Length: 429
Image 1 (cartoon, rainbow, N blue to C red):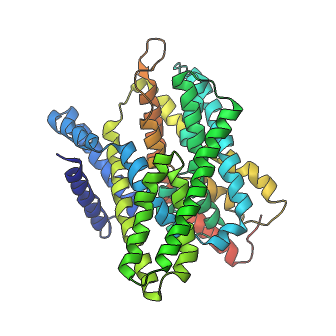
Image 2: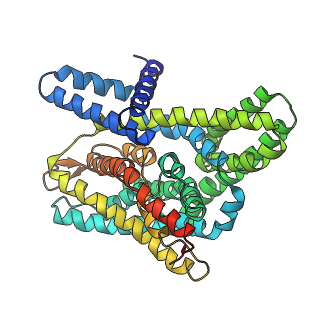
C-alpha cells in the first residue's frame, strides 16, 4: 500500500476516534486519539502474540510505510508551527520576552544536564551502564517541550494569560535550541568529532539565528504580496506557501525551518492579519488554518499512539523506563523553578505558575522523531542484551504517552485553581 493510501486510511481512523469521543469518552480530542491508537496497538500486539501473528506483522508494516521522523520533521511540522504562530499575541509575548528567552535557553540546558546525570546514575544501578555522552543525548531530545502537544492540549484550557503566553512562547521556540544541543551531542557520540565552543556557536548561529532571520524575511515577503491583492482565495494560497515552499527552502539552506515558521506565523498573525486582509478574509484565514491544524494534529497524535508497534521492548530495561518518567519531571521542575527564583525579584507571578509550567511541559512527536534518528547497532550491558536505540526509544515513548495522556488529562484542575486565584485577587506567591 502506498504512503498516500496509508495516510488516507489513518486520517479516517483518527477522525472516527474523534467522532466517537464526542459521545463516549468526551475528553480532549488529541488525548482521545492518542489513547484510542494506543489501545489499538496493544490489542494488535496481544493478538499477534496469541492467536493471530500475521496481524501484528501486517500492522507494523503499515505503520512503517510512513517514516515518522521524516513525516513530522520534514513535512507537517511546518504547518503546525505556522498555525501556532498565527495564534500568538505579539504584545503579550513581548511583555514576557525575558522570561521566555531564559526558559528557552537556560531551562533546556539545565533540564538536559539534570536528566543526563540522573540517567547515568540510574543506569549504573540498573546494571545497564550508559556512557555519559548517551545520557546527554537522551537529555537533549527529551528536554524541549513539544509545541504541537502543548498548543493542542494546554492552550485550549484557558490558562491565565501570563502563564499561557509563557508556556506557548517557550514551547514554540525551545525546539530550536534543543535541536542544536541534540545535533551537537549526536555528532560527538556517533562521528567521533570533538565539539568546540566555536563549532557549537557556529551551528547555533546558522541553525537558530538563521532560521529567525529567514522567517522574518519570509513574513515580510508574504506581507507585501498579500497586501497587494484583494482576492481572498489568493491571500489564503499565499499563506499556504509559507509552510510548504518556505519550510522546504529553510531546510535546504540548513537553517531552522521550525523557527522560521514560528516567526513568519507571528508576523502574519499580528501584522498582515490587520493590514493585508479584509474583515471577511480574516475570518476565512482563522477558519482555514484552524481546520488544517485540527486535521494534522489528529493524524499526528494517531501516529504517536501507533508508534508503540515500532518499539522493541526489553524486559531488562523496564526499570529505566519506569524511572525515566519521574526523572524527566524532576529535570523539568528544576529548569523552571531555578529561573523563577530570579524572575520573582522583578515581577509578581501567579502562585501556580511553576506547577503548571512543570506539569504542562508536554513531550510529543518531536522527541520521538529525534529518538528514531539514533542509529541501530550500539549494544549496552555486559552481554550486549539491549540496544541503545531501543532503550532510548522505550524511555522516550513512555514519557511521551505519560505526558499526553496523564499530564494532559490532569492539568485542568491546576489551571482552574490558577484562574480562581487570579480572579480572587491573589495571583502572586
